[in-house]
Amino acid sequence: MQCLFFSDLHGSVDRYGKFFDTVATERPDAVFLGGDLRPMHGAAWQSDDSSRADFLEDFLVAQLDELRRGLGSEYPSMFVILGNDDARTEEEGVLDADARGTWTYVHERHAELNGFGVYGYACVPPTPFMLKDWERYDVSRFVDPGGVSPEEGKRSVPHDEHEVRYGTILRD
Image 1 (cartoon, rainbow, N blue to C red):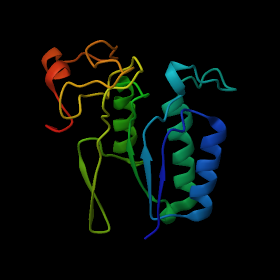
Image 2 (image 1 turned 135 degrees about the horizontal axis):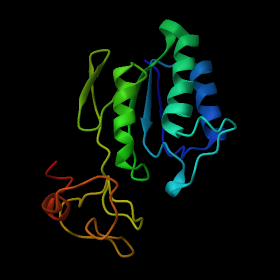
Image 3 (image 1 turned 90 degrees about the vertical axis):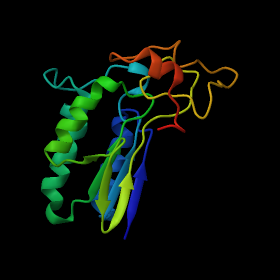
Image 4 (image 1 turned 90 degrees about the horizontal axis):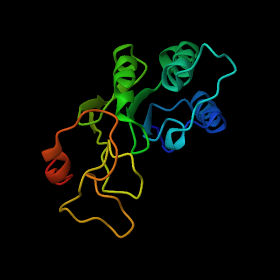
């Protein structure tokens, strides 16, 4: 079984072009997208068509759906999580693409691949960045020097303050 893993494409049209070409050429059984899918640090995505303003739906999902039509039965099983640079507000669009069969969203979920279990988890320990949608303490409330605690950052969706302060990756 051939599997490919990609992450940190950060909305780069050039990087995604190489990603799509690699999938089309290699024809793997499975592709894992490990997060940081959108343009970096909230940068706007520029499209030649002003009516296509949403990166996730109008670019990434549209291109993958086109690839799926082109590859037919050779379209790989595609598993995705969001990354610490992707706002959690994007999760609804990711779930919509999951429902349409573009990919399988695996954050805190289980999926199957040829008899193997696939599990996803998007959270990371505290980073120096301010977006904290996917950040949790690791095993304790320790923050590395230069890091910003989950309580001090920004979140794109409502959250449980107790869970932000005391939740850990270990407990998850």
